[in-house]
Amino acid sequence: MIRIHYHPFSTYSRRVRIALAEKNIAHELVALAKGVVSKEELNKLLDSEAMTAPIRMSILPAGEARSK
Image (cartoon, rainbow, N blue to C red; front, side, top):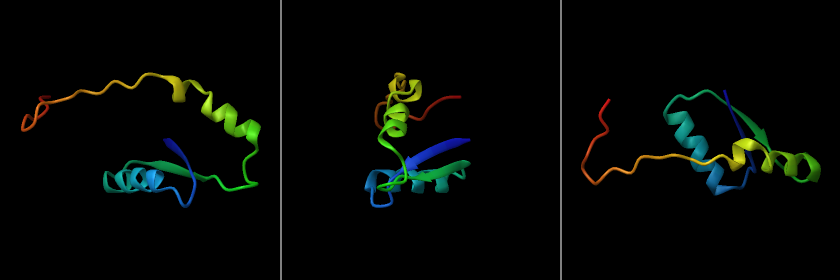
């Protein structure tokens, strides 16, 4: 399951939450608000391997569908 750390006013996380809901992808929401998460916990999250791992994405020319 995907864990989403977000701030309630963030428009970036809102887009992610909408996409996950539209695709019916299971996820857990963890709200970040002042006083809820300590600086140390947030730094540990940002320094985690998941945040530093390269993202590989295929770029397709316009109009081409991805073959299976």
